View 1 (spheres, rainbow, N blue to C red):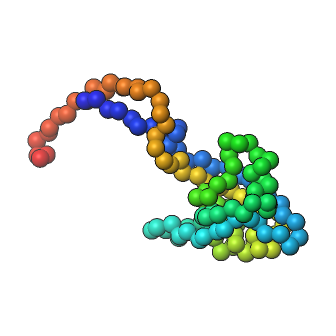
View 2: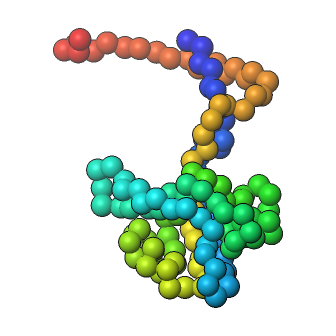
View 3: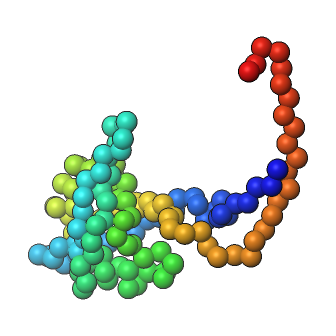
Length: 131
């Protein structure tokens, strides 16, 4: 049996980080949000569907580490201290500062790396009563 993995486990894991944003009076956050209800559970998050240049989120992206800018598709899982979409939206509407906890699922094609092959020995054994 020969198994080939298309991506390393650490590249397939989700990324979770926080960003502290601040906006001026009368300014928007600069993000288009959509409520996303998790299937089969009572959780809800906010999905970032767009970013407006020049506003609070874009300014944060300009000042952050280039490896973790907030991008369309990222999920807001908390606006401290809220962890459900409706209270998070209410807090964003009334606050000038917000600490966001974000989640990003790594997606897209597997990274182009030299092929690595791992060899596994697999032993199959049939016991009585199993088909």
